[in-house]
Amino acid sequence: MNKYDTLLNDLAPKKFGKKGVIWTSFLIVIIIIGIIAYIDQLIKGQVVTNMRDYALWGIYISNFVFFVATSFVGAVAVAILRLTNNAWRTPIVRIAEIITFAAIAMAGVTIMIDMARPDRLLNLFIHARIQSPITWDVIIIPTFLAISALLLYFPLLPDFAILKNHYKETNPTASKWYGKLSLNWKGSKAQKAIQTKSIKIIAILILPVALILQTIDAWLFSSTYRIGWDSTNFAPYFISGAFVAGVGALITVICVVRKVKKLENYITEFHFDKLGKLLVLACLVYLYFNINEYLMPLFTAKKGEMTHLDTLFTGHYSFLFWMVTIGGLIIPIIVLLFKKGRQPKAMFVIGLIVVLASWWKRYIIVTPTLLHPFLPIQGVPESWHHYFPSLHEWLITSATLAAALLIITLLVRFVPVIPIQRTADEQELLETEKNTKS
Image 1 (tube, rainbow, N blue to C red):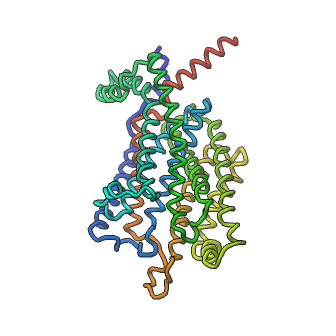
Image 2 (image 1 turned 180 degrees about the vertical axis):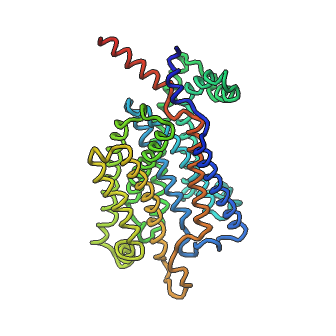
Image 3 (image 1 turned 30 degrees about the vertical axis):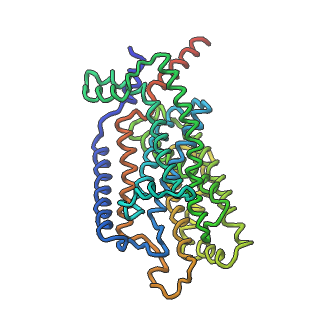
């Protein structure tokens, strides 16, 4: 019997069942509705949104920052675990790579949606100003996307070769495509050496690029000198927040994939225990930076800063602020400190709460600050005093979130989410060690 046979029965991509078809169709419908709303926005202009001269960075930028933050899981859970050779990482790294690729791809799309005039996209390159953080963003996002794609693709080469042989008899078309994607992988020592070295280089590269990406995003805000963003704490604040959002997304997706694809024998409670501890660490670090960001200004803030803090602590945005702080940080820390809280079902709930809180956190980072403009707000229309997304904005934003989920869904469908080759090698090594001891 081939050493891959048992693994292929469990890990080889399978066709969607009824629920999979319904889920995919649902996402496509949301995307189509969002495209229609976007076309209407292009025709009629930004007047169909509730963004005005003050709240000019609405839900689109909040969504963009969320996608960028979520993509950070590629650096945290993939690169670090790969470089430190943690053996327990095997069943989870590919899912993390898929999330990273989907998130950063949609971050690029979302920022173009926010531009309102996509026909002027080339101006970002033709008239780029190197001293502008926006120019740095234009450079770093495609760079991170390319590195993420390579980090996902290179480790897949052996698995594509295995799937090519697996489907040769039953599905020649799939076998043909997997064969092309495998780049003529034969598993020779030379190929393995090149692949190992390439993955290591990419894993090293993605760490500084990910940190630079989060830092540039923070600088886009802090360099505007606006109340609420004018902080030297913003870069580490963004990085620690991305740590939370990325690990939360990873836990949530792993729970769903594990259940749907029946991978309980591969993604075990041990892995959830490790991920739970990682999320606790992420939440503690982010809570520390939240305290720095909001507590110190209480003692030193000028009048404008105090008005902003009052809006968050007791004013219009207080419910959202305390919901994301207590529900998205403090409660997960308390729950995950206990072993029962790191069980799969509890982890799914916590992961989902953390992801939702992370999205709304970006919303309250962006919106309240913009409603404290430089110029006096007296004499402007009443609608400019407040901001809440219009139906067009919600539909378009929902479409981008659905598109990210669709990318994840399709990759999970056609790509083995747990490495077949590496899992087989690890099982073989364990078997050899047992035989040696006995």
